[in-house]
Image 1: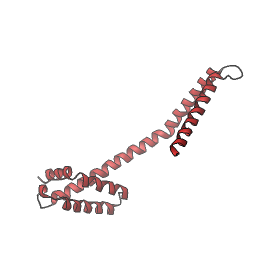
Image 2: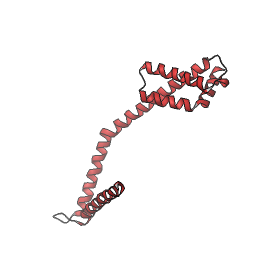
Image 3: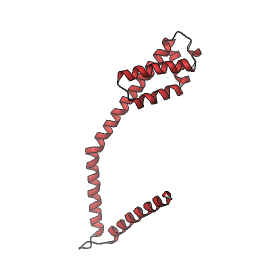
Image 4: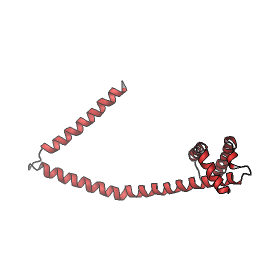
Length: 146
């Protein structure tokens, strides 16, 4: 039922846009200069969009690139901390069972939480990633222990 309404809404919007486009293409102004007027308006719109991009989009991209670098650094720090702790264990890394590994992950997550540099969501995602990537991470820790 809702899907039908959404489909009609989409068709209505497309029809409206098509009608507006056709009116612009086949309608005329007082001097009969439709295409010239449309081209001028399109150029003005492109220039306006370029200005918006320069004023707003580029700074936003810089912010997201910075956040990406920060996120990568946080992940690498958490991974390094986990691998260091696993390498310090006196047991053989190959014999480390999943339960002990999860305990170490929980300890690392608790320490990261205390640092205040991670959100609850970030900590949850890191923990989930580390727990699911048990074999890969323990092999990295084994290399560090050697």
